[in-house]
Length: 516
Image (cartoon, rainbow, N blue to C red; front, side):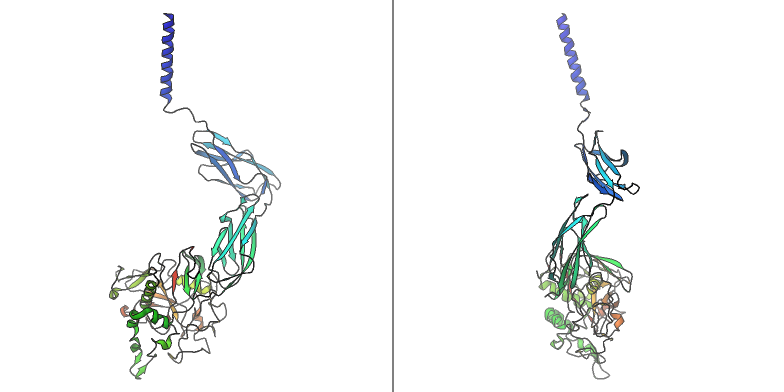
């Protein structure tokens, strides 16, 4: 009987124990796995000064609740969000004083772990060491062709430095970009000192220079790198423009020969009778030559052409070259249009690689050679003799268009190129841009200036042959003209001997230039 009672008691105890465990299963026992924690920077035994960036790495299987940083056994700060980063100001610490740092990580279950102690001495920190691996000194490269800049850097406190700590610059062109490897095609012509700069977390620098000569390329285009540039000076306040994609731009103004040959019948039909508009019935003759739209003027700029006709020409070139057309057209209600009679304006198609007129910002960067604060494309010298304008006392090989003066061939004044190797960026003909004139400078960046008006004017840059030398300055707008003078009731001056064009098109970032 006693034996049965004992057995029954054991059964009851066992059942109670199982029930108790079952009841507690919802919350479970406290998780006991400790987090891991370590100070990544600064390194143990290093010397630092000023404000030091402290980086802590902490992990846990359930998650980190917070990381605490202790300096000299005192809590400095707490960070609850990865990455765990702190700023430690050493300004008030005397030189040669050694301070211990450690971090404590607390996980979501309340478990904590202390890192190893890191000892830091107050004093001047050691600069990083930059190692340039390319290009070699005295390298020569043609404008628009690939130059690979590469290097590595190490720091006694930070260790191996990454892309964000390495930058490149040119004494002729300013900042070029960042990274251990930088591919660059957009250097201006000239002798550059390219400098690789490595910066550690304490602001210490190491610089390595290398000499690179950029020569004029063997192509018809210059290459402008994507990136951020400054424009405006010396006439206006400095402002930045950013190109998200590189572009190429013609070295020469569009010639009448190319315009007629590549435009074909579509273009020829539009301009074949335009000379009749030059007739002066009072004198019984023509103000301008009847054969201006002929092979006689093949080497001269395409003039007496509207912006609308220039965009049609660009569309034809894009189709010929299997490129995405650059333009779409809008009617006066800003609705996409396919009927010529309703065209009121055009806009650049996003992500197009087709031929087009440059934007005002692109034109200005191309003319000044990046961010150079030049007043004129060739430099700081006055225009006299350097471009086709009223400031030139002895204009060479002039076509007699008006008052004994006029346009010159597109290959004139080739001794005075822009830093990218572009010719006649000032004078001869003012060049049409893809920007709707909005009154602000510049009208467009990557996106072209836009207006809701049903009739708009477009920006023209560079100055004409019949303007004064001071009008040749890069930041100035020469004029602004209507999209199509046939449909512009207030401004008929949409073509004359002073309006021409220069073509451009976008490339994709990282793609080789078309000639590579």
